[in-house]
Image (cartoon, rainbow over all chains, first blue to last red; front, top):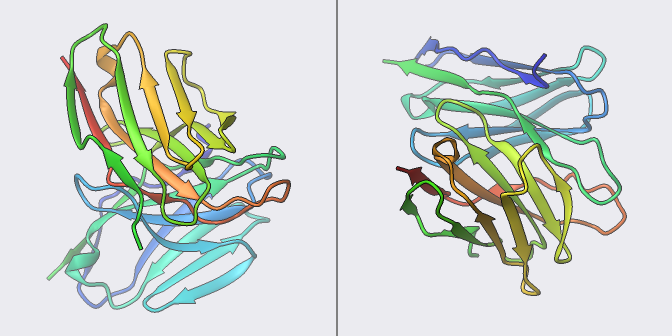
Length: 114
Length: 117
């Protein structure tokens, strides 16, 4: 079982719609969660991070965390063609006392169509 | 505010050779992590450095080694290169608080694309 799982996609949504990206994790010791956007041939760019159960909103982006279900999601409202990219979900932890690594999923490819 | 910088951008090596990749963290950051990203995969954690020591290591062989300097910059060394080492190597920096769990986000550099012939 992979530690962080994402549907590889592609997820296709029309321009202006809401894109919903999902992620599950297996290690209950994971404490913090991050969403990165990665354009083809580029490096990951941090979009959102969430530490507590519930929703966190930042502009068109909303991250949702449910630790009991070990589930993280990212909603993108009013999707734009420029949002077309691969979205990586990452879990941090558990804390070793001196460090905590990020464990990534394989990413979900999002295509926003005109 | 300078972000994470990595060099070189691209590198071509042959099997059996050795390579050194370099990373300067974002201003104000003291922790450097290295990741390997194969095509179509998510980044895989190699190791993390803080206070010039390797603090955590992923499932990579001893051929992968690193170093952190007093100015927080870091190097990744890979010996006896294999074809399977071809990948994008990413450096990420963050701010840690000694002895306290740090959930500060990691910020990535542009990466070094390593090709092994």
